[in-house]
Image 1 (spheres, rainbow, N blue to C red):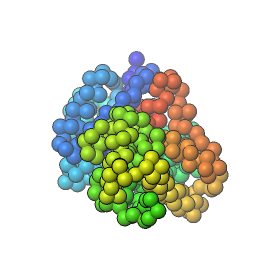
Image 2 (image 1 turned 90 degrees about the vertical axis):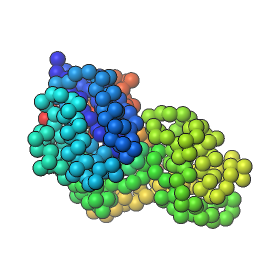
Image 3 (image 1 turned 120 degrees about the vertical axis):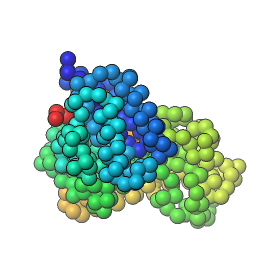
Image 4 (image 1 turned 30 degrees about the vertical axis):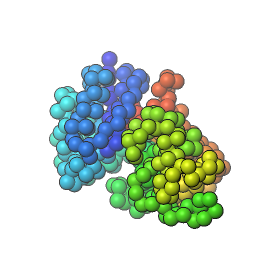
Length: 343
């Protein structure tokens, strides 16, 4: 029996998928916070290894090298790769690059710039193998990838985070993490334009919870702590969001707070729409190009596709998989693709 584990080592989550005899049979996502200490990352990896057991091969991508626990990205890649090799203890450990190739641990230092934040590429390559033309959008907790595919080829211009940001193929607009005021400086509240407080009082998870796009409590879409450490209830989210306007929840009606959250959500969506417009201006997609969606925020991407009169397909539909793993396979698209793609 051949067993392969695909790893996506992120700065907020560890995601892993296991394939045995060509069939995806387990997926796990764990919160981690390497910026609070390297031990957080090591513990999450070790717990996943204990849950999954032994594998013949390990395919790895990462974004955690961006964490400020590392002095620079190249050092982060080398340290994470060394940690993985030490904990896994098998010879067949391979790392995916933005050049769409696997490299061995011995080549990590030489290829660090290509390994850094290349998890988007494995997902896009997997989609391109299965869909001739599409805009692949992966909305994770922190960022959204927008990757054009034409004639079964990835036609993205960016390779690293900086160039992908510049070309509109990466936007820091995530489903649950990040600050709502990153998208607007003021909002219409109770009949007045209110400047927003530039403090980390709330996150996009609070916006989602108020709009019922996110259930109360810890869930796959929101594994990070709340901004104030208080519960992940809708009432607590309302209180946190009210502080962005220098107010208490008692100053808002239900309609007021709902309208405030809706305005912030639409502001974020407009930023994603503007990136789609930029890709259309390059001629790599058209107004009718279908969207393939992945990530914990793909329900919002599905709504966006319908608003733009585009057909929508979920990443999980490209895989033969049990119903119980469908949601996780799309939530953890890079890890899923890594486990399924042959080296």
